[in-house]
View (tube, rainbow, N blue to C red):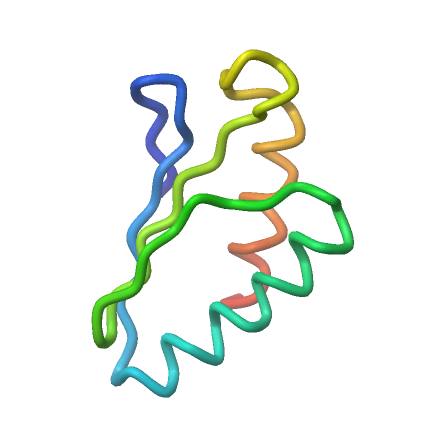
Length: 77
């Protein structure tokens, strides 16, 4: 579940291994580019942490963030 805190929409994803985590990040990258809305994220081995915020709106959570979060979740559905 996405959690909103400190003007960020956050979620941590855990995968079987690094390869699955990296494949997920690649798919998210294509989504983000299509929406012209890019996440702050990190990856350590099988874990990907994503934070969404809208820089153009003063680094607050907007509908753009919620739309990208929903699209990211749909990758794993």
